[in-house]
Image (cartoon, rainbow, N blue to C red; front, top):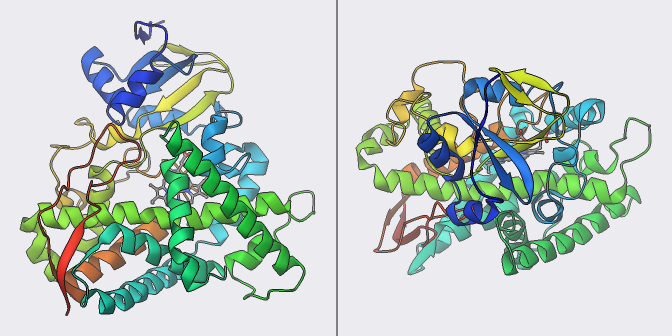
Length: 415
Ligand code: HEM
């Protein structure tokens, strides 16, 4: 048996909050290992990283999700007892349902809807001194997501609803006011969506049969009953909120274009393949998901390390995106690294690893990539703009993070 390196000290929650994204990787670099033990929120936690580690993390016989997510994260980001914390058959049934809402046709449709919203906005931007891309993107994603799901949204409510979705996401790494804001935003949003689902169930609101709203309203649990109203609302929010979250990646996409003028020529040629490589590299290079957590379901050994039932295990998503064992020159932005076709199921995991149909990997990757490509096309081919002096730095110690200025654009012209 090998002994797992143990970090000295009682608890490292404060270090995690202070250090943010690099917390796990900086320790692995220091200890020269891909596994170590620490204590987070008074609990032992084993941190792991790398492709092989990811494979065991997604082995559902060895790990479970139930009871893993701290309540404070459920009350802001995910919704209490929703899909993220389910296991086994109940999880597969729910997941199968989520996957059915995110077909290739639906991905395309959302990409188109979003691009139309951006174009409509751009017509207004030409008369404005400057705009903040993050703000415009989150509002337009909220419009597109509500339209696509079938959720009615008054134009006068777009901004405040979009801000609530963002506050839920921002509440994740926050303590104090950020947490309170996220929780209030979730309570408001759940009440809003519950009322809409209730109206659909009672026939007061009719929406298209195949719309996610209608599907969610009439989805049956394995026991044959309709999903509880509160749960249906949380799960519909689990579709809309992460679409709004793509605004973070869109802002990083613009930043990448700006920071890498050497990519300009290839972007201008409008090659779909290059667009795809570029957005993949954005998802790799820029920080979003920090790490994932699961609990050991039964004792096992991995590489002669002992994993005991009940122990919390954290998989280092951010670290794997910058791991020199996985990527050549990981700290360089190089879209072409994705030219090589390779199985990256367990090595490139910005939105989780493994098979999304079976485990907990994000079912929204197709939608995310489609929308990121649509925004890249918009920024490259539909508008001309200047980037005024601003603070484009993003802090790695804040989870989640964003360029400070949100990416300001000025002198915008339509192409
Ligand atoms: C799960 C990231 C966009 C819906 C996840 C997970 C991550 C993630 C890291 C957890 C994987 C795991 O626990 O193993 C992201 C990022 C996004 C994004 C960074 C880009 C902004 C989306 C979109 C949707 C979506 C667009 C839906 C339209 C979900 C759902 C789950 C999930 C429902 C839970 C899956 C499960 O527990 O089985 N996402 N996601 N996400 N994501 Fe996403």
